[in-house]
Length: 346
Image 1: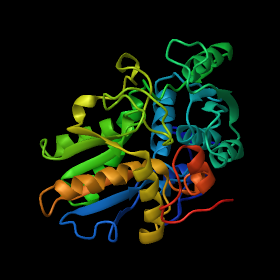
Image 2 (image 1 turned 60 degrees about the vertical axis):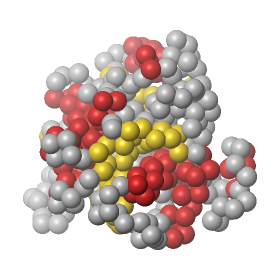
Image 3 (image 1 turned 30 degrees about the horizontal axis):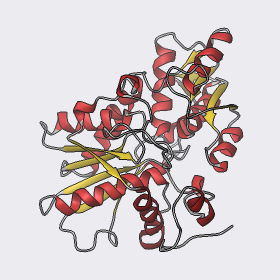
């Protein structure tokens, strides 16, 4: 396979409307307007569907840029192994792009990732190593420390370091931000995104502030149990967002100064919105999307009439059918399923 600029090149002459490979499908995701959930509001809430990326999440963007950048600067040699700690989506993105670019991928993951994510990682050929996601920053058994050790033990291996690698927010500055500005014809007034590594809210938010001369308001969203909002650490039951670590150990790529506000959404609200999105808007989205959209609805409720609130939906709901859409799992996570829009006991 021929690799050009970090992505595989087709051996055939290009045809209009034909993509060279799955990596060419990354980015340019659609935006859809909410209608039912915004009834009574005087603002528009627009959802950017990152589940339309080939790996199913916004993390495809950073995976491609992490690998492209490392190959270009010589940090990642042809055929070298990529090692990363991930709660799922970054791992899936790296496994997908790694498969296309000839790099084996090792993912250190939590025991609590969904069965669907685990199956996807395996389907893309990633080697999986389970770690204690609750281990603190000084604990040699935490996922990042294990990833560091594995990378050091494999000759030529490259640690992608999504939490510290500037190519993470750079991917969103170069793609997600410009897409939103173009898709809304510059009408966006508020940008809302959950905070995981901080790459999406930092990169996209910085671009939108730059292009609008600071007019766009950037709102980060935190789950219960996370310290980004200044609250004490506790159990986090929303996949892929938040951190239980103290500020001194927050991801180096997260620039809190880009945000104008950080909101916390109760767990029950998150999962209720996830189910209402499916039932009322026909949008099957994951819990981190429910988190961000719940906050976007709050923002829209208090924003000036005519405001345009754009919110990132990081991934789809297919990877959470056994969790967010399962009453028994919700009850095991401390939420009584009574009153939710619908559910399953399977």
